Amino acid sequence: MMTMQTPVVFIIFNRAETARRVLGAIREARPRRLLVIADGPRPGRAGEAERCATARAVIDEVDWECEVLTNYSQTNLGCRRRVSSGLDWVFSLVAEAIIIEDDCLPHPDFFPFCEAMLERYRDDQRIMHIAGTNYQFGRRQFEQRQSPYSYYFSRYNHCWGWATWRRAWQHYDRDLTLWPMVRDRGLLADLLEGDRRAITYWTRSFEATSSGKIDSWSYVWTLSCWSQSGLTILPAINLISNIGFDDGASNTLNRRSRFASMKTAPLGFPLNPPPFVIRDALADRYTQRHNFRHGWLRDIARSLLRSMLKSR
Image 1 (cartoon, rainbow, N blue to C red):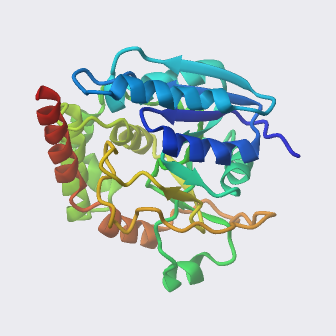
Image 2 (cartoon, rainbow, N blue to C red):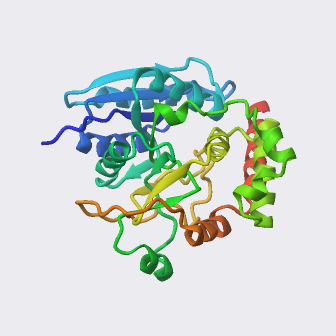
Image 3 (cartoon, rainbow, N blue to C red):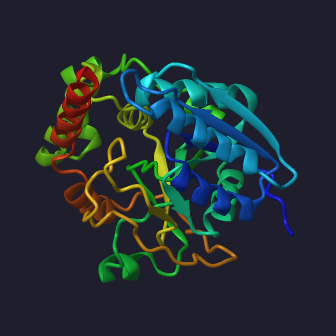
């Protein structure tokens, strides 16, 4: 049985059941190093300390030859601070890694795909993020345009199973220091090619994140990549199924969402790389219209709801 050389980062919190399923998928890849990040229980949440402890106990089930390193917070830092501080720790130790959360179930092809992309584009400064998701939903236009290649290039750095390098993570602008300049100089219009709806969506998302109304590390990472004109590699076939759409989730609450438990399929090896590094603007336009519409309002509403529940 092959052992994967690339370190895997596993981000967990308080859901042992989904963590165990994802650990089972990691077990199939058998990474030699597993780095585990966990946040602490939220104050005032009955039973959450026990649930966090149960989720952490899942890591004791690692039964292959593997160095396990843990970075567990005893207090609750929140999504933004915990993930970003955890990844700071990761990239202080390793130069590149594959990152998976406890509700993102990967297809077996996800790990070798990420490992191959990390190697192929290791020194290509244009590429900052590799993701395992494909949100094109089998559109014929997309398939005809991308055939026969195994992946394409995008501006959208989806984070349900992804990989990156220390050289890219060093640009993570944790305090969004560049946002006022990007906003005031109208640079989003350049990045988003004048798409008014997209400009409105991302302006409000970054503004809400900057002001603390949204507790999100991923919006920060998106702007960090965009500020460097960084591209994302996305597979031509979806490799990640989010199994965490339920009432216990931090963000994915709607069980009926089209993004809940999406089907995965084999990508196929050997990979067939495109002979160019050109962003697929048509695929990105579809993603913007179908993935990013009212998300900033949704995220603010969820943050307010969590605050109300916490105060009870």
